[in-house]
Length: 528
Image (tube, rainbow, N blue to C red; front, side, top):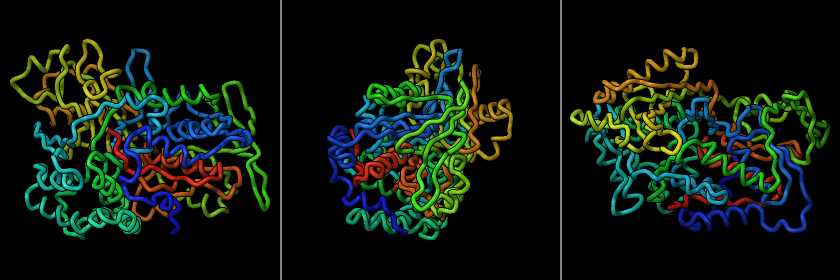
């Protein structure tokens, strides 16, 4: 397969500028170059998720006129959020910002959102049943890859035999080669797309218990599927990026709700430069000319005021997998690129919010009064993993993202991601809340006397694309057989997983294709 995106990564990690401002400049300059004297282009973007909004940034910066059309009553897509009438902030999922998100961080720096990140301790916390807390601790005086090796070799989450087998598997992985030959290692990793991570890991000496106790929760957090269902390419790509930079595995959460602290600043930036966002504008039909050189001639949109037609010079579909599958005309399946998109699947997920009248993750039984002191928040301020509940990752947002999620007179707000999501989509909200609450109390028995005061469930029957073995060939390029029609979104071809960083990378590639200019992406540049 021709991995076009690989041509955008000619240098090893660390050769790019280390500051957010310099990364921003490098990405902008490489994608757009000199736009002086170029004709104004009218661009219609379908979708206002992170990919659509980020694409608008790139295109208004290049001097073009941009309109975004969104079917929902709110922007943000999978990072969408809103406030209910009672002042509760609700979002589509739990969003974590790793320090290897160089392209996303550059975007956030540009629009003034970078300061809205709250860095957490450089350790990944596993909560086992009964309040048993174990760490995957990356804090170490010596940097990458030694801090990662130390973390995996010393974690109490695994037995000594599992740690040794873990070390054997990782020590024989392409990651070792990547320390001296990054691109060579990535070529090897890309070739492992047809193998599940579990099969690869066990085949290289790793243990199934390591899979069960540590790697499955991480895989669920990243792709909403377990190690048996996720490709080795996907997991090893993440390991590669984490191993090559000391800070890459460090994470942040937002101050609060994404529509205020992430997508809001992006929208302000593009609107200040002339872009327009049209909510409740659903594409009903893509109009196009057929023949030897087909082009899109317009869009028929359903709006609250009736149907309307729009036309533009360029059309960019910044959709998720189900969205692009609905958007593409059936006749376009004659093109292999578009037909392949219909081979992709999306993964269901359910996100549960539970608010209590005290601090759930304050683990000490003897601190009952402290746990009930609503004026002094206490507990685990980080992303949390567990192998002992149906939610693989979760966080107390009242601690970790307090600007919007801490409420006066209230305690913890746990946001729990139920994965795999398949069993939960048909269940009632009440059943989901009751089940999740029981599992929370099993993890944190010190909080058994706390009262659940509010809850919410967001069910997405189709979320991230399923990064199963053998799916990589179906990911489409950003340029399409339709001359003025382009694709963006984290499911499109780029060298990372379906994520916020993947969405941002796809946007730079799409913008470069639209402007017919080479793209050069920042790689794994830690932004401290």
